[in-house]
Amino acid sequence: MAEEARLFSTSEATGHASRNDCWVVIHGKVFDVTKFLEDHPGGEDVLLHASASGDATEAFEDVGHSTSAISMMNSYLIGSIKDYVPPSSSKATTFGGNDPPPNLRGMPGKKEPPAPNTFLDFLLPLFVLGLAFAAWYYLTFIAKS
Ligand code: HEM
Image (tube, rainbow, N blue to C red; front, side, top):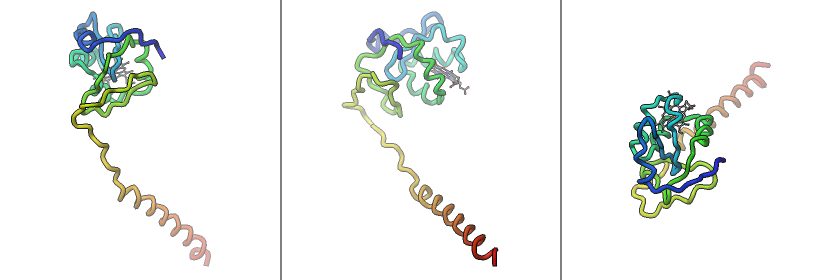
């Protein structure tokens, strides 16, 4: 894990959204992606746009970046945001083990994850089991006679 050298205030970390100086904030960490703009498989415009938006966490998560993309991020890490508060509708989790605990007090609209579809979750395996049992029964007792 790379050293998180600096702590930035939100205003320090934003305002770097040009081709010569592009930082993005993802999960409260600050990445200088200036040198990565040309090589980013998603294109430089998305990075510039995400940078200008202030917090790129949701945009980054929505793409569903691979684990290799996530491990690449360490090379661009330059610090983290002081007292980072994640975007309210974020399904975000934090990376790594040394994040400051996010301050969730006063966060509006903390969403519960949707309830799993218990009906299908329960019945489908039961159905498959029943089918397997029927096949075994047929092959063992009926087909042989
Ligand atoms: C340091 C930050 C970032 C790194 C290291 C990174 C790296 C990568 C990599 C390696 C890929 C190839 C696909 C994969 O392996 O997942 C990718 C694709 C992509 N990235 Fe990023 N990315 C970063 C930030 C962002 C941000 C902030 C956005 C904002 C929307 C973004 C949007 C995209 C898009 C749209 C694609 C293309 C997905 C596709 O074509 O399927 N990336 N990125």
